[in-house]
Length: 182
Length: 103
Ligand SMILES: [Zn+2]
Image (cartoon, rainbow over all chains, first blue to last red; front, side):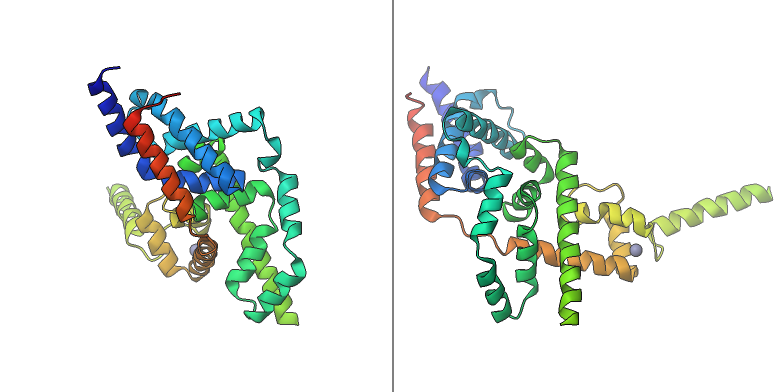
């Protein structure tokens, strides 16, 4: 490879990939739930991005990187640690691990604020709903970027996300009613 | 002739109500687009019409407030990204870009 060629590759990488490091890491954290694995996954993504950067047309770098990241994640899971990939059972386990009694006490202490209610409602949802909400509201991805990261059509992202929020809203409304009664 | 005048008058009124009228769009149309609108995504109807409806219609305005608050509450649960991880990854990326993929 000539030095001119590799300089271009370096420039492209610094222009398109480096600025997306934080977003890639956030999404990797959402997928792996583990810092060390998230770091590995981003490194893997960077390597793949580096190898194919000259073929990248420069449009929507984030969407391009998230597609690479998802493929890298699928590959990793196939390769070694299926137990680390998010699945509904794991999520249920996580929800069960957060002691509901403790959570209740905390909520009472901060006077059952709206935020606490929302968080509680969020964690009552199933995995596929939490996932889209995390991608959009926590990781700041667009619908299209979320679709690329999760490997589903944009329409699926929209319907899951909108249904998830509607469920939270319903949850809040019913807890308002409950509070009014008590 | 009177038919034509009436026709023209009607179409002008429709135009006005669609852009500057008090209640552009139906609540149902707004409901379909509300979350996409609040997320800054593409909507079927214009953002101007949606904003105007949310200003004028109490029910939809309240609904929008609830969704805004839910979105905000969730975004506030975001944990700051681990600085050490981020530094390591940016370092990894820069070294990769500088020296190439020596695998
Ligand atoms: Zn309305």
